[in-house]
Image (cartoon, rainbow, N blue to C red):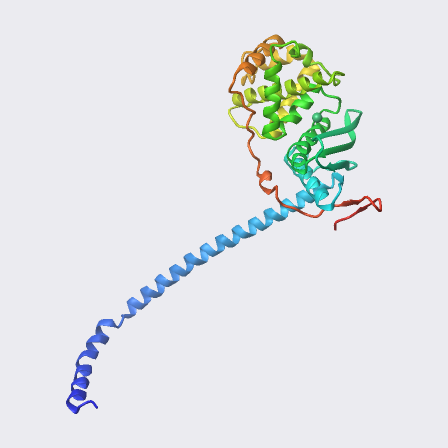
Length: 344
Ligand SMILES: [Zn+2]
């Protein structure tokens, strides 16, 4: 039990010290007002941050929606027949993404390109056929085969490039350029392989002189000549794009490089290669430096091939590439029933 004097002492202590305590701790009206103001400021800042985050989320959602809508639109250009729905979906997506990165994004083919897919341990290959009438390409039909990985990262971009070139030019293109530009779209190891082969034949009688190469419109009958044409076409395209983009002072996307090559081909077609090269040397940019004719281009190209350190040109990645893993349903061809099953 507390003794009386202790209770008294406690009361005295409370009596004497409490006013002091209250006096020391009690905030003034001005203090309270300041605290309220500070809190209001903090809340206002937090609100601002929240609003900014909300706007960011909305933008991302809109971008995603926009991307999905564009992808769905681009996919309508392809009618894919594949062993499974999943494979059809992936191939159609890969083609649509190529479409979105081209200048044809937003445009629609009159009739979708039929795409037949064979997946397995078979040699990776592709072919696209089409016709021309009145300077326009139509009736696209594509076959792609190989492992699913090689189909998606090399064959599809290659074959899609043939479609873009045909749509752009509306007539048959020189083989070296059409195949060369299409090969630029393939994966790095394939492009390195083509460079190595061009280096290997350079200086031998297998090498096709540029004077002949530039004008070849059909595939050679001899298979080893076909391989040389591909290797030289791909390497020459790499050489031209590398020089021209360096002269322009910026790294190009694949589509920018393709468009430059198409313009180069058009000039060669209309004026002849010597005149086309001469005209380029007279431009302010001089995309190929002092090269003014085919003989000089041949020399510069073969000298370049002799270098040990040549690498495929590295393209700038476009924002569309970042959405590559988006998978959406796609129309599917049922082989058994022989009907197209719409995904939606
Ligand atoms: Zn090809």
